[in-house]
Image (tube, rainbow, N blue to C red):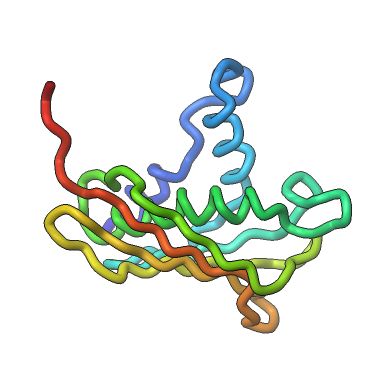
Length: 151
């Protein structure tokens, strides 16, 4: 397992001004800035970040859309941690929100591979307050893993 290879899959590939026409890429860059990879091993990825005003609601809580994007992006990175050459195509992404995180709180995100078959893989991504270990959200990400055709 090469942690640097996983890190490269999560790094923004361009500056926001270079991708002004792509709202999705801007949002991914916006959300992924500040993510630290703390551990990357086979079938597991551990990251952390601090909730900043940039990714918080006006009330000062972590935005649910940021959590969803991180569940998608970090869940996909778990497949790279597992040695797969591609992370596949999302089939389903579900999230359960059980608590809030406020500006200034450090969040630990742990992604674990639950299954990687020939064509379908599933990961779980837990979001916890680093200080207390309290769960704030949990994502389940299912992906189609089969190699695409060369049409």
